[in-house]
Amino acid sequence: MIKSLKKYYDKNQISPFNFDCQYFDSCIQVAKDRSKFTKGNAPYIGLEYEKGDLPRLLFLSLDTGNSESDPNKRTIEYSRKWCLDWLPENRKVIRQHWYRTHQFAWHIFNEINKKYNLDLVIGNVDRNFEFQPDEEIHKIKPYFTSLVSIKCCVNKEHRKQAPNILYKNCRNYILGELKILNPDILVSQGNEARAVVEKMEISKVIKQENISKANPRKNDFKIMKLPSGKVLLWIHHYHPASMRGKGTTFDLNYTKYKLYAKKTSQFLFDYHLYGN
Image (cartoon, rainbow, N blue to C red):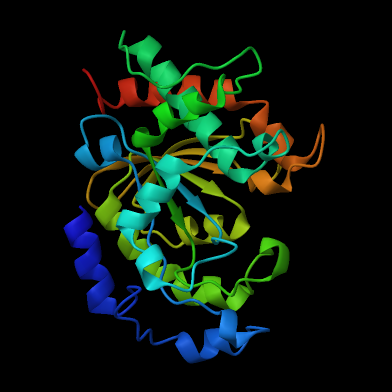
């Protein structure tokens, strides 16, 4: 998988070391400080996800917010090292994007453990589903992959979201990455990530429902059949960083984590994607 991704990056000239993206000129024009623009960011790929023995859970988010100028710190290998080293710094962090991503992965694999009578080591949590002690968060990290919707970073102050043109330009690249990463469960975080999934080739939507009602007009849980014949579960969430209190759009997603996970484990069972 990693060899295929690197080959794909080189072919499209979007790797940190071999960057000559066809859209570069239009993207850098919108950067407020061009000296901070970094080119090419690789995803985090968990070891168990790479092995493929378990259901593959992939989070598709927005952008990195900030990125290192050194290309050696934007590779797949470095991304894995950074993630495996990362711990929440304070209580505020546990209410933000990256921590919530780990929490959702924990819920998914906790239900898989129960459904299939497994004993996967996924970390200890308290009654609020917060990792206790903090180091327990490391145990869930091998089981998922995290991909952002754009390959570059404008490094805005306060990690503000990148301009829309970067998302538009990168969508085809991300679609190519998704084919290589081959998830069974795809969780989009934020509307620009949703736009990527909506560009995917889908043969049929088998089943869909609105679990959170965060957007009453759009379903957030879809079982879809791809042209290859593969059945994919797509869950859409608002970006976890948008959470600002009870009843907000992401909070409606967050309070349904356990239900999403139960329905996901049932999906895996019903479509014979794991263990039966």
